[in-house]
Image (cartoon, rainbow, N blue to C red; front, side):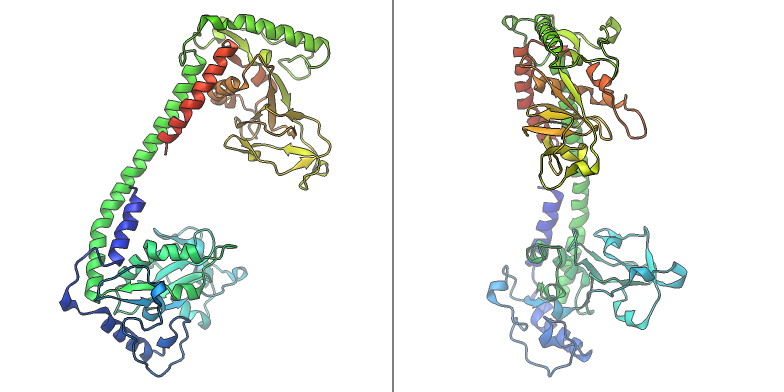
Length: 501
């Protein structure tokens, strides 16, 4: 169980009356709710319209048992002790949704009062970074924030985030879409805050938020159904929560440390497995599978034939240096020993690499006309290629099953192309091979070399050159062994990923 699960379980036990025992001498919540109602009526609050938040005084009406605000049986989510009662948040609090400050009128701290925006707080407190200030006017008086107010985000990706204000370092006024909830002294605000943080209320927020922009309404907040205990029991519940919460927080710290350790172990294990694979130590060699020297000779003959026929261009160490062969491999370059049936070669000897070209804006579109246009790392997501542009005038073309490699900006993202044909920008290279080479094995080796390739990146926007890739050394196994290595890695890596969960 995670720390979050433990916290949720603790708060749920608390709001269901299961965390502390009930004591008969503490009275019952129906009498407490009657007192709250009288107090709020004395301040001009319309108790009968607590759901809508109206403040027009009305003639006092009798409470309907433990259900004074029309809470139906279907709305009640769980059973509570007999001494408790259900009520709506609007019955036991006052609420406002913030003042509509105009950002164009913000002033310096010396000339205004602080505005508390959605971005200015989270569950841990009020943030002091980049505060904004606004000239005071009397219309703002009802939006002043006080100690022991509960503030809640009413919109956006953090809708429902809440904070109980315990300290105010300066005068503040809540901005629109920041709910400000104030409770009378007859209610323990810490208990109400526990209810708001509980799964009971947070689930209601998620279930009822506007799906378009993640908004929740003032009406929804006023209508939160609150399980209300007698005041003395509220205080005992708060004391129990405060006793257990530090233990949960400590558990959370240990959980975070363990997760980080697991992720580190998973990463290190993955690196170790990949390194063992390309050194020939992951799986056994099989003599019947032949040797890589013969394989490399077959590949060289095949490439020479294709070059002679003009079907492919000869790979060179520098763009434009036509006819310049890849450099010979020296003993000093070889980083580790490999099996006798393997051999070292340059990547450019066994694959064909296509460099991308950028297109002018008028040459591509977003209306799916032509073939996809892959511009860079933003098109890569966990080994998949995302398509959001197309072109009818392709120049640098990659085809299905090519291995795409990002080479500028973000270096080292890789994915196998599933589309029939795409145009690649200069931030991307495509790697293609004959049937005598497993591109899956090439990808494994490039994964072990990404940091080395990144170290060669040049210019203000980091980028690696074509020659950096095709000149890379690669330890080459026989084809059958390449395929067995790929199969072994595909089986092992998911286990490494689970270690990081």
